[in-house]
Length: 207
Image 1: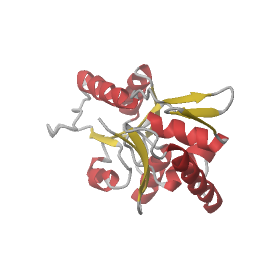
Image 2 (image 1 turned 180 degrees about the vertical axis):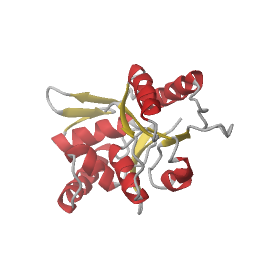
Image 3 (image 1 turned 45 degrees about the vertical axis):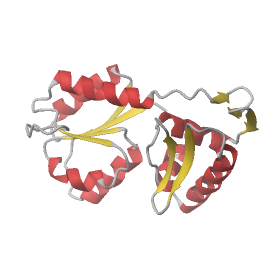
Image 4 (image 1 turned 90 degrees about the vertical axis):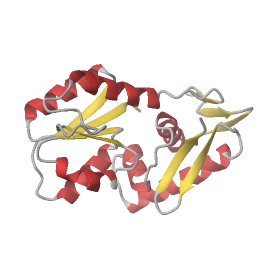
C-alpha cells in the first residue's frame, strides 16, 4: 500500500504542484479543486481516499477541525500563513512540504523483523509460527503494517480491500480481522492488533 496524500484547494495550479512533489516522494496523490457545497460529501471522499496526509488550502481551511475528527490518524496540514506547526505557508514552502512528506514516509517505513509474508505460498510467519492467510487477511495485514498506529474504521478497510463499502463487505472485514487477530495475538511484544471499540482497528506498535 503506497503512501497516500489528498490535497483540497480551489486553485488547480496549487493542487498540481503539490501532487507532482508528492509523487516524487513516493506518494500517490488525489486532488479536489472544486468547492463542494456539501462538506459531508468531501469528508466521505477524503475518508475513502484513506490518506496518510491531507492538505487543506484555499476554500477548505475552515474545515480543519471537522476533518481532523473525521479522518482517523491522518496528518492534516493547511496552506496558509498562520505560522502553526501544521502550516505549509501560502505560497507553499517547498522545504516545509518536503520535510512533512519525509516525516510521513519515515512513519510508514517501520520494519517488522518478526513478521514475514510469503507471497508465493500465501503464508505469514509471526515470531516462530507460520499461518496460511486468506487473500483478504493478507491485504489487511499489509494495510496495517504499512500504517503503524493508525486507526482504520471498518468502512475504510472495506473500501481499501474491495473498493466499495456495503454491509456485506464490512461483515467480511469484521470476520477477517477477527481471524487475523487470533493468529497475531501474543506473538510479539513489539506489536499487537487492537480493536478500538466504536472506532475501528489498529496495529499498535511499541516504540
